[in-house]
Image 1 (cartoon, rainbow, N blue to C red):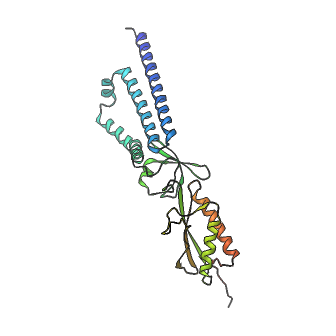
Image 2 (image 1 turned 135 degrees about the horizontal axis):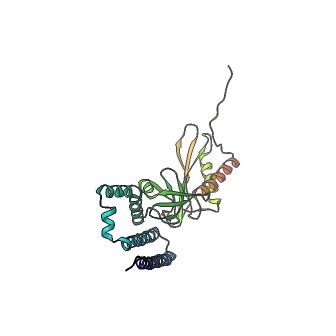
Image 3 (image 1 turned 60 degrees about the vertical axis):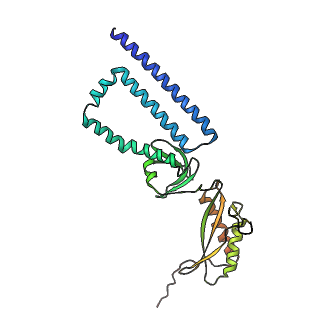
Length: 271
């Protein structure tokens, strides 16, 4: 067979392989798109990326085999132990660790698509996507943060979607030592109930009632009395939004009712 005919055969073979690969990728995307319409879960997204990568790798291997034969390729390129060690070493450092970390997260699911998480280094955002290399988070200002899988797998994180519909934020408020404590408790509790974004706590009391979080006197602070309560809200709102809403309402309510909000100050007296 002439060189020209060999080249034509190779080109036809590569075209067939490329077409088959393209169809396999499209089919894979179509199948997981249908699956994720029902439930956009993290492990489905990761599995789709993993299968797509496997299809591409198979295409590359088949192309290499078509051009030179697998035996010749392995003998000429990877015949040296040093080369093999270097390739495996680099892959383990930069690729395999992220792939394995992503696989473990897709299995154990410490978070899912659409959930809001805060990482140990205070990076916060809603999980938009996870592939074999990284997790993509979307922050409050729509900034996208890309975090490698291995880093997230090694960090502690807070998941604000622990329950399907209701989240909670713990608040601390300081009032003056001379304040009427019972009045302050009522003012804080009423301010929280009046917000259109707050909900009763999901756990009923012994009477079967869903009440709002109780306001407690917690501590004699250095120059104030510390009050605390838990606020519940729907998971469609961010904790920052609820924090702003409740802090603003409580501050205005305390001022309106003449309850002191203490703050440190320095009184300079001239001798």
